[in-house]
Length: 239
Ligand SMILES: *Cc1c(COP(=O)(O)O)cnc(C)c1O
Figure 1 (tube, rainbow, N blue to C red):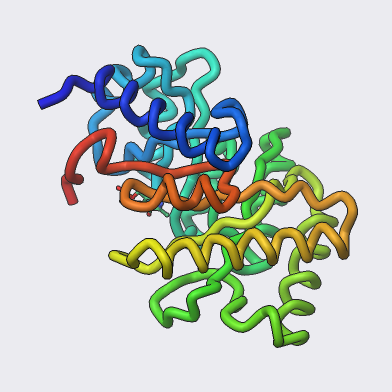
Figure 2 (figure 1 turned 180 degrees about the vertical axis):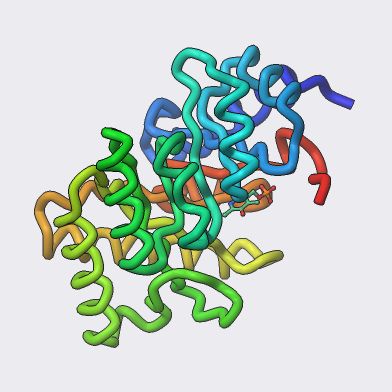
């Protein structure tokens, strides 16, 4: 069994190698350590290893962890689907919300952020695989489907017009267990969609949140700027 510092060092080395192969420096990749379900003591240990970005997918759990762990420079990322009634902790404690899948949740967060005098970075979640179980704006056939592109662009324009939020880019998930060719094709299609958005909106930031424990290297090679590894750092989850 490797210790957490060893596991993290290995992950960083793999990230650096994949970044280099895509002609980038590892500084261009943010590792969001997905700490959901894991205890506060483990996050403290991860912080001591140098990790600063942590991913959670339950609002109450993130609120509790953020309240207890008020460490310098620690950044909380909410990575899952967010129910409207659970949005307040994300507005209070979140640095980045990765899974904007509807305009309504962005509006609600903007209102709550105004009350908190805070800002939040957002990723807009897209579903490029067309899996029924996946959240996100339907971009399953975006290349040949002008209506899909327009719907996404309209949503992005409306989110962009909201105060207190800033869109960093797109977020997606490859199908569970997908093999390399399939996963990489989906990552590449997401990057091309982002490139298309940049061609339509010069201010588009074009960051890409994609890649988890099993596919982060492929995602980096296809342009990911934020990866979300969980199990590979912290082992199996508790629920
Ligand atoms: C749980 C989760 C992860 C981490 O998954 P691992 O397979 O543990 O790396 C990443 N992204 C999202 C959206 C998740 O829900």
